[in-house]
Length: 173
Image (cartoon, rainbow, N blue to C red):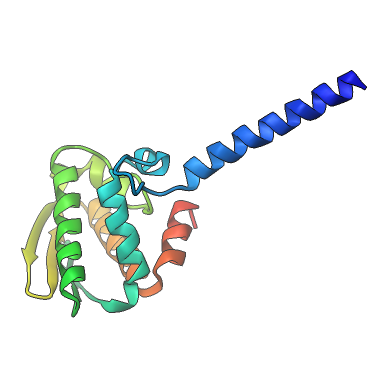
């Protein structure tokens, strides 16, 4: 009887601890200003993660065009909502800062690792527009060009589908 009680208590304790760990892993960002575990694992802070989540949640208010050009793409991502315009501009600026600082962001994308590991092998031009951002990215390396175009497709999927596209990217789908 004592052994069964001890075993039951151990299972309960493991369940409680596991529940807290799962809660922390699933928490994306933190309203208290600290980084959630998911944010840290993805290489972004809570401000970036909160911005991502808002962009995903409001994806229907964003429009995007992608033009394939020699060696890469030219994209335009815009919104009619001034606060989303500011978030789009801050997001892309932040991503380019992460690239420049060699601070890899490893979330939601199969192509980002290639771009982060080869940041000097491609050219980036960010233009802030009245309604959002225009980005031109090119490379003379065919593998990097493929990664640039793959990332443009991933981001277009995020804009089109919102959270389901993000979850698919996180789960490798």
